[in-house]
Image (tube, rainbow, N blue to C red; front, side, top):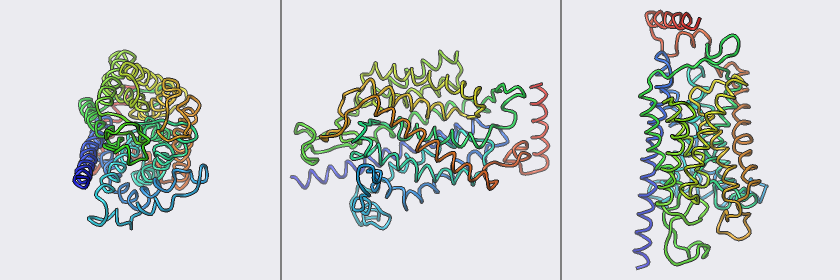
Length: 450
């Protein structure tokens, strides 16, 4: 009986994570559609290939060292202990568990779920820098965040034994900070060095609105991302655990689903809260943007992201209100930063993911103040200071700083940005006729602006 139950549990868990991977693939279908829709006609293929090619590059590097980092560095290292060599060895590229039919049945699909999170982090950066970044430079940046920076923050704050969970009481069940704030911060660091698109700002510094080339594609792309987020949310859970299997930390005898921190949860709870935070975000964005379609759809995503830190615990009404706050913060911060610092975030990625994710972490610290961050004894409880420090680490320390440093290095070698003439003509031009058409389009646009 026990062996049959164990076998069923294994097969169920294997299929569970496999299904989340298939659903999360829609996030990247959505990102490709979203970015192509937001870019101008002369840059479509460059935009598409730039985002698509991060998939093989991040996959290979994540296999070789990204996954190892997650298991090796939950203690920092040397913040709350050393490197976990044994845990990491079991998840190295030469481990039997990483080979087909050689080890267990779970590691491969669990690795793949984390890999899709890595793609997401890199794709968030991709949208913000369209129409002016060198593809090779972006791919280097994608590997840095996808197989480096984000997986370090996952080890610190998204591991049941992570030092941030133990010492700070950090709680981020569905990755407001662990994926979104870090990716938004990383994108901002790159944008500071990269600079705005030609023509984005008038001579007096006033920002011009470069509208999406294809609004319906942006809409469908965002709905694909919404759909993929169902897989994203579910992949953040452990599907079924025997309370006795983790030392009786969870009370009761019934097998249960848990968050990544091994705290009990249910798919029903996150389903309701996901929909309420999405709805709150769309409603608030529609109102604050006065019905702008681009920001209404983006606001739905900002609402989900803002509520994600605590959506395993929030009441549905709390999820809705926090989603509304997240969308408002994203919209207002985007336009303030754009005007004040002349930052050209082409699709609002820094705002929707970074600012909303940062705000969501802070809000969770107050709303969930005193709630256990983990079933393990001795861990700090959730608190405002721990969440604030965690938000700083995610957005600035592991996000903005690495993005800015790597972008600076690439810029110093002349590798970061495409030449001005290429940007004016478009990154897709292939013939003299296309060049002339693009040049005429640029002249017409300049005349209309005057």
